[in-house]
Amino acid sequence: MNKALEQLKKIDAEVKTLRGVQASLDWDQHVYMPERGVHDRSEQSALLASIVHAKDTNPEIGNLLDKLGATDENPLGSEELSDDDRRLVRAIYREFKQSTRLPGELVEKIARTTSVAQSVWADARRKSDFALFRPHLEQIVDLQLEVADRLGYEEHPYDALLDQYEPDMTSADVAKVFRELREGLVPLVRKIASARQVDGGVLGKHFPAAGQEAFGRKVLEAMHFDMTRGRLDTSVHPFTTSLGGDDVRLTTRYDETYFPTALFGTIHEGGHGLYELGFKREYHGSRLADAASLGIHESMSRFWENVVGRGRQFWHHFFPIFKAQFPEQLSGVDLETFYKAVNLVEPSLIRVEADEVTYSLHIILRFELERMLIGKELKVADLPEAWREQSQDLLGIVPNNDANGVLQDIHWSGGAIGYFPTYALGNVYGLQFVSRLKKDMPDMENRIRNGELAPIKAWLDEHIHGPGRSRTPKELCEEVTGEPMSARYFIEYLNTKYTDIYDL
Ligand code: MG
Image (spheres, rainbow, N blue to C red):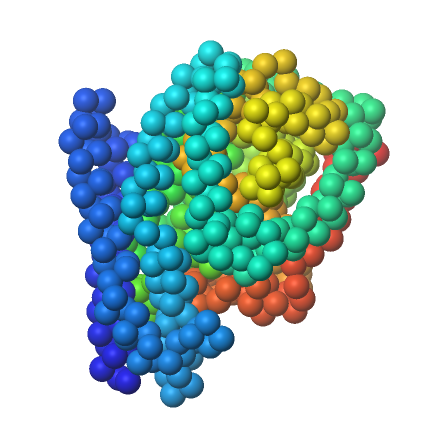
């Protein structure tokens, strides 16, 4: 058994290393690569992807997992193994099962279909013409239905797709959490709409990129994001990626006419980055040095972005520093006005620009539509109309064209159906974790007020980052908070915060 374990760890370490190589190529493509490098790069990436796929599905892994006693009923394998080894076995078993259930031809077909669909989608969005994208999305839905069938599910085909991004959660679980969210958020948004509006004038001023970057770096430093183990660069779409356990790359983008994009974007990616740098050292080089799920990953980025970065105490400390960076733009603007401006709530059409209160409603909309598409209750042809109806119901506004509605996100063109819920689950997990953090650190707000963010990072390292993939999201949530996932904390947090800001 020891020999089998050693062999499995060796294969796992190679897979992990190859993924780091893939991440290096992807990062370079989005940050540095010249435009015409794309053809060579796509050859390199395709070859590497096929090598990784062959490694992932190597039948030897199946033999070793057998020897270690891993089965569907007992994915942790033999009880003679150590606790961490059993969790590693479980993580490998899960991925091995998923990748071997999808035949190579299907994976290739999806890659080819989505690479065409992505460029058609970009064109369709520019022209705001859903009809162009429609046949491609129809193909993608059919392919994803095949994926769901191959992966297997008990109740709803959507469960199989969701499970790829958020293990152990079914669409019924998500629907339950989202019902709570909807019931909590819709009345709050209505109340805010009829309250006296906050002054967002400062948001429209011109903030040069260099100053934004300098300030963003100060915040990352305060968050103890270690620049000897990471970098910050710019890209069209901000992201975070790990090239290795001690090499985590963040990107952001600067909009000189709307500073919140880079400011909160940098803090958001910084939150992802701290997670990636916070895995226990003994997990480095293995699959356990990975996030528990995308929802948990997003809980960390949103915690830093919204709970910390859009909090009053944070600006108590950072506003004078920000003002020193931009004395002209902020002359005559006081802390309270600034704090309220960066928390301005307004139902809008575009998800990525949505505020903290309305954001989750955008996700609920996508989840409802995806689940109906995959459940064959909705045809792709009827999607734009269904989008408008949901938008009216949830946000009280209707997009004037497809570009601002059904065509706005890249996800579906890339075949990612079942991914969206993780964004809203992040909000929910995040505030549930905060309930425990505040018990352990009753003076959390005071520390933020003094700019002391290190103790918060240390708490997250111990309780959330460190365990990495050794825990499932469900296990992590129960271990940290003593109860299953609940939207209660997030809704309470929003009610308290926005009752104060809008004087409701
Ligand atoms: Mg994110």
